[in-house]
Image (cartoon, rainbow over all chains, first blue to last red; front, top):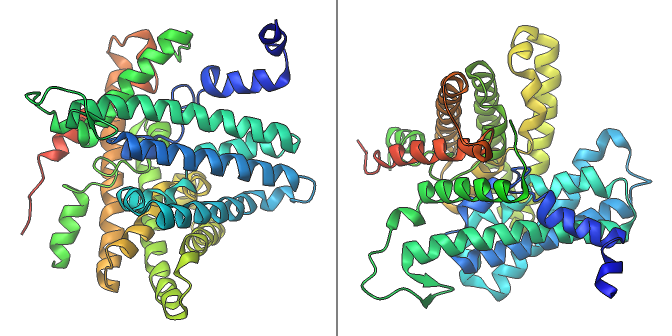
Length: 206
Length: 191
């Protein structure tokens, strides 16, 4: 019963939109650079997904907190400053506690700033809505992004290295597909993935 | 590594779009026809080369004062400011050029290629001349990629039977995948 009532609350709708109907990667095709470049290992995908979720949530909330004071003419640069502050925080956190992941991700952590999802949520949602909904919306978009990252990286890591989260899952005789760890593998997997999700939710562009 | 070598590898075998997968959002959004793709490509070459050259001395300054943690913040502000100034300048003095790629300028601030080039020269500790060559060559590589994709998409729009769920942006990834395989063939090319 509780679940049925929950279905009609605003919280639930925002969550559902972010994860499935408006999935930032599959439907809106945003944030592709990082979702391809870091998904050859599942651990990198998790770190990136959590990093982006954190930055989307807090920057969207900060924008929403100051929405009455940000003049609309300079709002873009304001977003940039807010987002890059939080990105630096994520970068320093990773470097301090997870030095290996931070090394593997390299410059891509800094590129969270230019991930269109972050800017997109601040502009489309944060600037117009109260803080609590902005937090939920940011969380939903971040999770939608992370789900795709996890799935893509699972396919790629299993095929390219025969492992999942560094645990051997394929038999030792499995011939590894090196191309899956490189850029072309990423492009193919995400292309097929977008196809699958769009058939599933019935979203067609043409 | 000599400069010619660096230029050739950053255009072909280490193409920033097809090997490092950067700048995908604009590449997918604007590659519907060759004319727009060329305009966007030129704008990117211009901005990336300029910001690479401006960000280098700034980074040296940051390093001298021991505040390299702020590099991200400073770089992004430099980029936003450069794009803004460039737009005003081009609009005022070069109206013809503005008509051909001016509309793409505001979009460039969020193009990851611009920021990535600045971050890569830090990571790889290039000298000033290497940075200048690298910024120019990798943006030319990006332009090459967007024009190639746009050419394929133009042909595809006329005569191709694409599954419904792949229509629009989905099929672009498969095109990019095949192009990227082709560019893998340049690996090991050097002078």
